[in-house]
Each structure stands twice: as C-alpha cells, then as structure tokens.
Image (cartoon, rainbow, N blue to C red; front, side, top):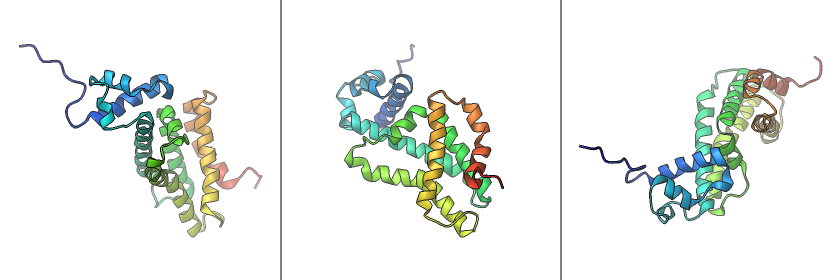
Length: 199
C-alpha cells in the first residue's frame, strides 16, 4: 500500500513551519524575497493561512528576529561561567557571539534592524536585555570584583558590543574569514581589557 504524501506540517505547528521556511528564504535570498504568499505555497497551505499567525510581513520579521534573540540567548547562556575571571569569561562569551554571527549572519542583521513593529517593541526590548544586556551584567559584575575600571557599565558595554558586532560585520562582508575571527577572539578580548598602549 503506498504511503500517503507527508504534509509539510501537521496541525498545531503551522507557525513553526512558516518561521522555518522564512529563515531558509532569508538565508538564501535575503529579506526582500520574503512573502507570506510564497511561504504559504512552500509549506503547502492556502495563501490566507499564514494570516492566522502573522498579520503582515512585518509581523513575520518581528517573529524571526525574536527567534534569533532566543537562539543567541541560549548560546550566550551556555558559554557563560560566572566562576571564571573576567578575561576567559568574556572570551567565551565573545566566541559564542561570533559563532552565532557566523552561522546566522542574515538573521543577526534582521535582529538589529530598526524597523520592528511598535506592537513588538516590548518583546524586542526584553529579548535585547537577555542577550546584549547579559554582557553588560558581566561587566558590572567585574567592576564589583575590582577586575575593571569603575564607570557606567552601559557605556563600557557599548565598547565591547561595538567591537564584537564590528568583527561580525567584517565576517558578513567577506573581509574577515570566520576561522580567522574565531582564532583571534582571545587577542580581541585582551586588547579590549588592556588597551593598546605599551605596559
């Protein structure tokens, strides 16, 4: 007896199927190619079906960005070890961030895009706090331990974040090979913490 053709999704997980298809399109063709109608065709549902989960393309982009933040949060949480001194602790977090950036370049760009729907702004703020904010908390903790200078942790985190995201941008643009970037994480963090002046 022939096996019936498997549907691309089963009841209850259409949203997940649409997000997975959207992320594939994002990786392969870019954000401009995303269309709810095309995604419906890809997962095998009516063109109106995605509207039950995403009222428009912006809502889909918001959901994709939140998915990215959740994934980045897991990567950072896995790498985080509060028992470590600051330099190896920050090195592990930096490596996790750049690893995520290498594997999810298009998604990371979407995550940082400033075109999110106002309805999602609270969720987005929470997601950013769980990821970018976690680095700020590491720096604040290091200040309490006397490992780095006093000052506004948010301002210090801006320097750290700019360095990491700058390297991620170089990788995405093809200016820096991923393996070179990952091999240089230890040196990057060392320079961040100790500066460039001779000691």
